[in-house]
Amino acid sequence: DFFTCHWMVCSEEPGDKATLHLEVIVPASYTVVASGRLASQHMDASGQLHSRWAEERPYSPYLYGFATGELIEVQVNEGSDTLRFLGVKGLESEESLHRKFQDTALMLRFLRSRAGIPLPGGAYTQVLLPGDEAQEKSSFSIIGAEHVDPILEDPTEHWVIVHELAHQWCPTPAGCFRCGIAPPQVKSAFASP
Image (tube, rainbow, N blue to C red; front, side, top):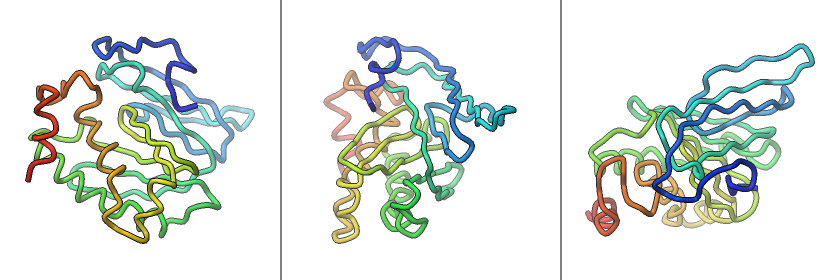
C-alpha cells in the first residue's frame, strides 16, 4: 500500500509538517529505501537487516514512506547529487534501469536551474515496480513500469519521471514551500522555456 495514512498515523493537511525517524526490519537479502537519509544499518543476531532512516526537514506526513524487497540498484552522480534507480530483481537489469531512467540527470539539472536551489537532501531515488503506480515521497518516488516501459519505444514518454522528480521541490498542492513559489506560478516556473 503506497498511501502513507494507511500504515501510519498522519494528517492529510498539507500545512501540517513533521520530521520522521523510521526503522525498517527486513530479511538480509532486501534493499530498503525510505524518506530522508539512511542514518544507520546493521544485521541482528537472527540475520535480519535493521535499516534506520531520518528525515530532519519537516514535510507533510502523507509524503513519508518506504519501499523494500529484493531489488537491484544503479547509482549515478549528477554534480553533488546522487540518483539511485531501483528495480525488482528478475524483472529489471542494471542495463534496463539505465535505459529507462537515462534522462533523470538531465531533468534534475533542468529543475535545479529553474528552482534556483539545490535538490533537497542532495539525493533522490526512483523505485520501479510492476503496475501503474506514480507516487512521490520525500526523497524518492515509486513509479510503475506501465508508465516507464513506454520510454523504451518513445523516449519522449518520460513525463512521469520529471513529474515525480519535480515534487522534490514542490511536494504539496499548497505551493512550493522550498522555493516560495505560489501554486499559479509553479507551472510557469518549471514549464516555461
